[in-house]
Amino acid sequence: MPINIALDGPVGAGKSTIADAVASRLGILHLDTGAMYRAIGLAALRAGISPSDEDTVTALCGRVDVGVAHQPDGQHTLLDGEDVTGLIRTEEVSMAASTVAKFAGVRRAMVAVQQRLAATTDMLVDGRDIGLRVLPDAPVKIFLTASPEERARRRWEQLREKGGSDSYEQVLEDLKRRDYQDTHREVDPLQAVADAVIVDTTGLSFEESVEKILAVVEAKRHG
View 1 (cartoon, rainbow, N blue to C red):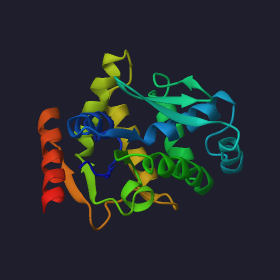
View 2 (view 1 turned 90 degrees about the horizontal axis):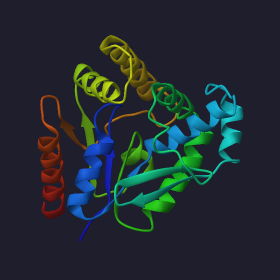
View 3 (view 1 turned 90 degrees about the vertical axis):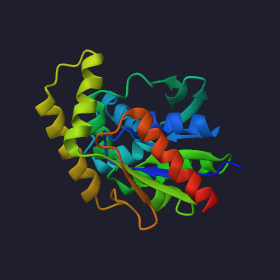
C-alpha cells in the first residue's frame, strides 16, 4: 500500500523533479507546496504589492484562490483558475515566494490547503515545512539536500536552458540568500526534523538520487 511521504529540503535540491519521479514509481500523487507560495508571490507582484508587506500580502491570500491540478505531465499550479505553472519559475518570483513564505498568515493559509489535499489521498508532499508542519505524522520523512555549489550549478543550468542570463555567481549568491531566509524565518524555518532521513545528492545523477529515495521509502515501509 502506498504511504504519505514528507520531503523537505533547500532551494535547488531538485525536490520537485525528483519527487515527480519517485511518486510516479510509487504510483502516488506528488504535491509541490513550494509552487503554491510561488503563486502567492506572483499574485503580489501582479498586484503591485511589495512581497515584504506582511499585512497586505496576508490579506491577499484571502482574495486569491491557489489550487493544483494533477495532469499526466505532473502538477499544474492554478491562480484564480489560471494555469501559472510556467510563470512561477523566474528568479523574481522565486525571491518573492521566499519572502511571502516568512509570514505566519500566509503559511497558515497555504498549510490548510495542503493538509486538505493530502487528507484526500496518499501522496508525496514536498516543500520546506512538510515534516514539521504539514504532515508531522507522515511515516516517511526525508530531507533532500546537496552542497550550495552543486545546487547553484544545477539551477544555473536550468535557467540557461530557459534563456536566462544570470551568471553562476549570481545564482549562487541568490541561492545562499534564499537559504538564509528559509532557515532563519521566525515561522516554521527550514530544518531537518529529528525523524527525517537526510539524503545528500551531491555528486549523484538524477536517477541515482531517485533510487536512493526509493530505497529509503522501501526500508521505512518494511523496516
